[in-house]
Image (cartoon, rainbow, N blue to C red; front, side, top):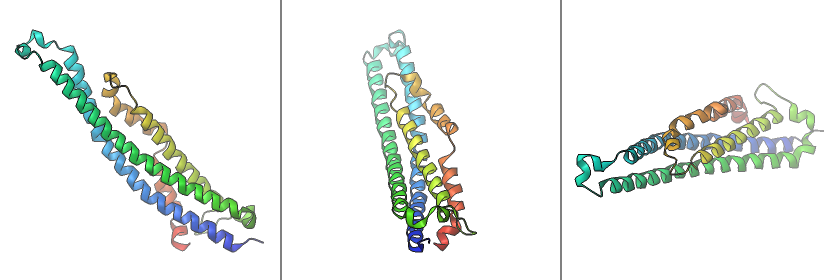
Amino acid sequence: MTDQAAIASVHQSLRKCFDVIEQQEGAWQLALQECEPLLSTLSNLAEQLLACQKVSFSNTALSIFPDLQECLHYKLEGAMEATLENLNDKILSMQKVKDAVSHHVGSVFYVYEVNADKIGLEASLERSAISPSIADMLEWLQNIEKHYRNQYLRMKLLLQVRSDCLAEIQALPQTWGKLGDKSPSIHQLVEDTLLNVAFFRENT
């Protein structure tokens, strides 16, 4: 016989996890939006630095300032480093989101595993008009956690570009934009899942 208390415990854990995901998705999207102008700034700085390296100031009217090219080069490199630091701060914010989601998804699976024998397979697969099955919701949580992890790792690796690879840095906005083409949008995935569990969250 199915233990209703065990089902209630899993349902409570699921609802809490969906609440956390809804909150964390807002933090993820904010950090993502804040990355875009920083990437654009970084690309522009790389373009200026490339131009600075190609032009010989000694052949221009600026030759009367013998240290100008070196000073400009130093200033641009410093601005690039500062922008990269700001970008890495945003990536750190996204890591916190990923870790929070992973932690709560792991907690849900732990609660389910503890109660799995009491619930039974049939009850785990049972759906109703207001609630997806426990199995469905566990699968959705796994997908969300996986996409946060994959996107975070791709973004982090992308920003590990060497500071002397100016052409790659200049192309970062375009490369960053293509990341979303490699997997479904996290935002859409989360929105769809929250829509699927809307009645469940209201009635649990």
